Image (cartoon, rainbow, N blue to C red; front, top):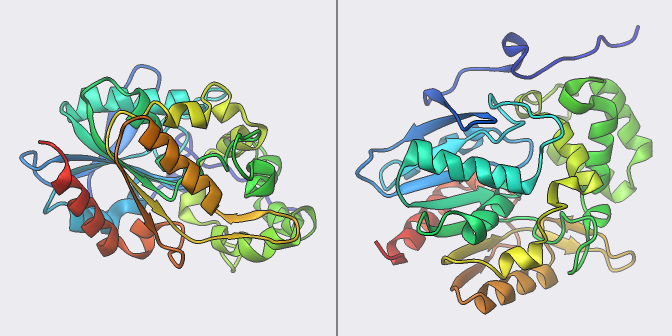
Length: 322
């Protein structure tokens, strides 16, 4: 018997969402309704936490409990993730960035430090370059796939040599807005449609061993995956040009990475060559960048070591101008 088609997202909330420790709120930015949570008092410095791909705001939940003594921390669901709006055909870095600019203006209403993981780290980089002048005090790039998430990149491995084939698989078997919804078919196809190095290294990290659908995946619009695989997400935003426009201090944490000696594929968010280029471009833009290498750290420091990330954020914030 074939598996019934699965449906998740804001149109099917009973099957999709669960409750969390922090109260959730929404704000309408004009095109998208953005869901978020807040921890900490308004007399503390403002901090905006931006999740990575397939992650909702509550991926920061443990970190928020540690950060609330030092910051008023706002954690958001990006459009297409969590309880925020789905916007078919409009998943681009510029739209994600402008959503957060509007969120800062409407919800935070004061200058802010931004910190994002993975794709959220690329959005943090976008904000550090293109946000309204005076709104971003500093930016934390938590293991972002700068250059490596571009299909045709100017530095190192691009999407086809990194996690891209996984995104292609997700798009094919889940479909935009879960329109296909064949989870079991995707897991089975992964064995034959993905390169062996991705099956062994990436799939176990992304999907549950028992075949169950992780909560974070239920809250994710697979059109994100298609936008990354096809390159439309960055079509109007070249990473090198963006980094050459950074206008605030940066803290960059670089986690586990490995480049295969035979075919050059990359496991991890960015290679050492790409990280070096990020630092060069930010410095050429006239901004300080504090590069921290954590080669044994999994992709999400705030998930694996929230205390360590909280300490880094607090240390970084203390060095910024009031």
